[in-house]
Length: 477
Image (tube, rainbow, N blue to C red; front, side):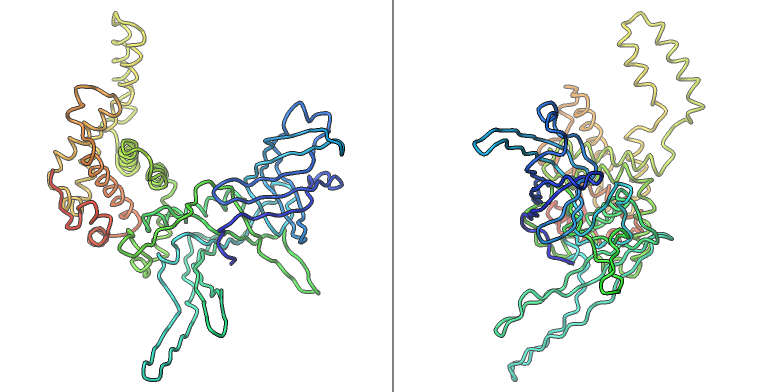
């Protein structure tokens, strides 16, 4: 694995379209972390008479070769500027593309060819979360001797299906070995191996799901820093020997933070050590329940990855996540749709006969359409009952807690002045939002495979809980 991306990368070379390799244009590819991936060309791919009419259209694939003879594929390219100017040296033409994905080391001729059989991913905070190292240091002060030994840890493996295996593997990096200084470090990375090649969308899906799994455990946004892939399209024969070098993959991203926090195990919701004996089971649970719990995942991670989201929106996102979880796990209706249908039809018939405006009638019918579904109050009570062993340790007066949540939610949704005094704000809103986040995490930890005792232990040691005043897991309204 290569070093993490820490600065802008540039590749100067020639660029062309797969169906017109004769027309090659000089240009520069710029990969800028947290900004854009841009291709600056000294020309255009379309006919010159069309330049002033429209921008270059979306181009699925642009191929290139760098000055250092590296094959490059640019995937999903969008023309954002074309310039034509006249100078003393003649006509000057240029164009600019925004690129979604870059593959260094391979030429994919068409989008269907963009497939990978293996992925190697370096994630932010993976080393801290895994916390497994192969160094053994012994010091002898009498002999003034320091002995450093290193044994590479064994890969940590898990199978999440018949055609996909995931492992956490380790590599040793030597950054400085000199007579007066030795600097070596170990890095962990995730290896994904498929039985058959998978499309780019399938690959991004598993990269994202592993990323979310780590983010949930770490309690902080996790991002992929380095991605490489193995593809059949890159098979080569060198000196009569089969060779398949990995392809470097860069994805347009505007989110990776420049600075990273220093994290300790007490900052994390759970670490690898907490699940080491059941790593495969927990990872399988995460993947198998992803489709069912996708609305919950999306709402929870939307908030986690956007820490600057206004507190009001964080609160509403967590309410939605809790409602979505209840809907996924419980019978969420007072009556079945079939039983409620004749009731709804009679109610709408009565509403249609009212001597009022059509807009008012429509509003009433809209509200009644889902009246057979459980209320937020009912959903919260159900969840608090299911997870009472954990929830009761930090929410003592559940009825008052639920009442404040409902009044606050209703005020934020409807802005009814009658609820303004009953809704919480400021520090109390922050505190209750953190409580709702913990309730959501309790639900997801349970789905992951932790029992109630384990969940209580995880929460009681977490430094975020201490900061929120939950160190002793007691809360009084």
